[in-house]
Length: 107
Image 1 (cartoon, rainbow, N blue to C red):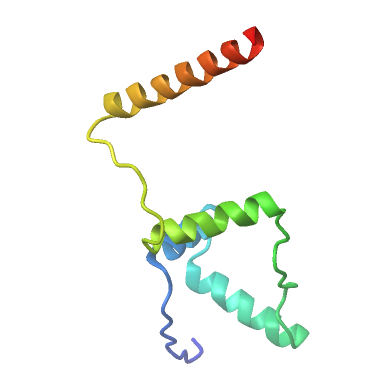
Image 2 (cartoon, rainbow, N blue to C red):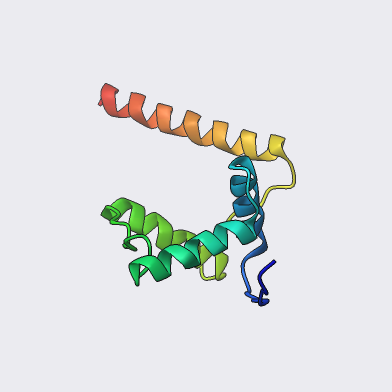
């Protein structure tokens, strides 16, 4: 058997787990998949795929930014102690919107 070298990399645990599941479904380990990636890189003398930045519309970009701001604590969100409390508030908001629509039609 050929000599091997160890390579330690840091990766998000969720990404690692999902990748292991993916490659397992293909009948290989993540180590084998990574070796394929490296060999293909050497054969092509480049990344074996074309990296690109996804293009999102303005609404999606705004939603992504809002999510980042919530995670960073820049935007405070409502918290509920139970599903019932959440549901009651949503139902009240819906009823309020419907009442406003009826008033607008009646005017």
